[in-house]
Length: 329
Image (cartoon, rainbow, N blue to C red; front, side, top):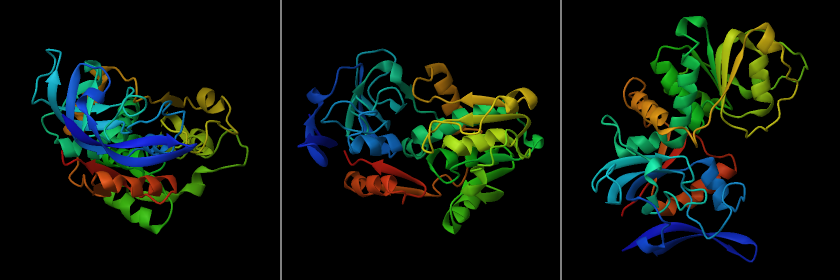
């Protein structure tokens, strides 16, 4: 059986993006074959498209770390043909051909059934970004209640940040989104943020170990000095979750003092190897309690050919909101 897929080729030291025809027989071994209906664009996908060896070691390769579709073949009793399923994380789209193709074949452990209250399209509106935001909010909510104070979300209109704003606002939290410019402010307010601040607020270089207590909780999506600033400005007993490093992997000006003098808790978020039981729990929350009415605000839908321009927009910092890809096959 033939299908279409985005394929990244390495030729003479350059990486070329093409749409090619492939066969099911070309796919790696696995328990479940899935006809992908929707996928989404994540930063890892953009990096894979330009040959980043930290994401994808071997080429040619099909990116796409998310997928939502219909099972067509199954070697396991866990799934049967016709089941609608979701995949995020593990090795999908990194070194295993991913959702930028109309078909994938994967191990059964990577797959969960679509929650009843979530369509395949909605699942990819969330995707890895929404799932990561869900994990962040889940951990924050264990110790921080709406009455405890304001919640700060860095990258407030990005993939993870926008969903975190949605979830927290839906659950009654007073959310402040970190933005960059008037256009992002409008989107942040549409997502549910009660207030916004420019990203310079999270770039303190004073060297102070402790800053003014401002945030009962923080969902950090960028790392680096913004994360350091968030930790130093968290209120007593505050919770800071962290899931990204686009601003760097170091924590300048950070010390142990926020943790031992204010009892601040720093929680790392990993969406790749998250156990299946917890994965299913988060998706259930996303499909029910956390699901909002303005789900497609800030969402752009493209077809397979439209992926290439959006990859360039993401890599050049021009992408606002989130892109999902609809396959015709």
